[in-house]
Length: 61
Image: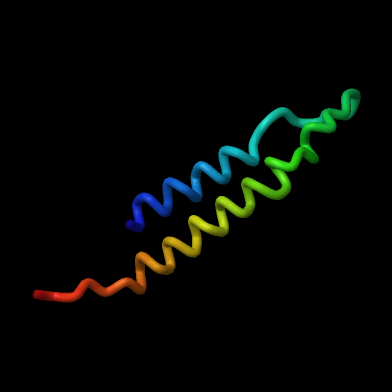
């Protein structure tokens, strides 16, 4: 479960990457909803899943 959660976190960080603005050219895409809202929520979900994975205790038979 922890491995899958870490993969979700990595996917969230990859969603935040993209083209950059330079000194001579401004790229308005840096303020897109995916980069500012969706990707941080994916990372948050991933981090919370990691915490659940650490705290989860299997019941022994």
